[in-house]
Figure 1 (tube, rainbow, N blue to C red):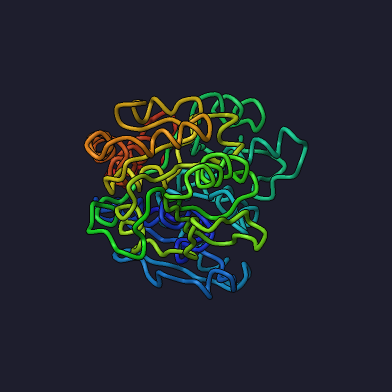
Figure 2 (figure 1 turned 60 degrees about the vertical axis):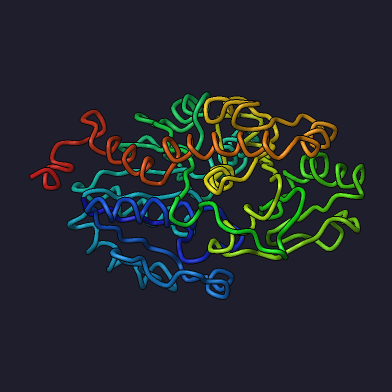
Length: 366
């Protein structure tokens, strides 16, 4: 199939979780013989931190404004089998217009920010990447979250066919690797600063650091403010490119997963970082949310922490126990949560007869 994607970014992993996910998914799809074209607006804050300039085996279309891209996009859609528009695509409404106008490609919307989207709708706020007609005109809606979020897409946005397409990890990039001295620590956390994660991050990392001044803690990520409550045993490394993630995770005795508030409230929304850490063989301690046990078995593959003392207790576990859990989590991740697995799930969804209109994907099967 030829799959044309209108997304936020695939070229820069700075300050967003979309790029790494799209790289893994695109790579797996291309290896399976599909053709990927990704349209991305060339905005300064991603251009200045760009860590990918081309899609191996696919095509990256960077454009400065929609008018300059519209003709190229229309040409690509003329022989496309699938057209995907994503959440936070800066030109999603304009792209939606041309995608809905054509009748060849399967029309797909993929919300990689489902909890944020639904929280804004619930608060009566505008969702800039979804038009007035909602999602009723799309043949298939994919959600980064499962559970009750799928029903909300139907009732709030009129989606006819909805399915979860969860986060995933590329094991070629995220795998056990020798630790690096400058990342070695007792507890690490990797993630862009987010105000709606701050309370949980303070509870599960800042307070444990205060309780255990003899232990070393490390935070990696972008956009952290100057007034963050640092202490003398919390170290910081600015934005890490994906190539550094494995060394970061593997250099820590224990790594922390913290979920955004909107994701916790609705549940069933594992972050890509969770799978990355597991694929690297890092022991994980995580905050608690509904559905987590569908992805990892608590106390067997992952440690759950409801408060600061739970994290402090996890730090006291022996190396053998931590490594046993890490090995089990890695094995499950490779079997169920790899980019290859998600690519296969996506293809199966795209080929499901109930999601098609007459003529759609017929050429791909011919």
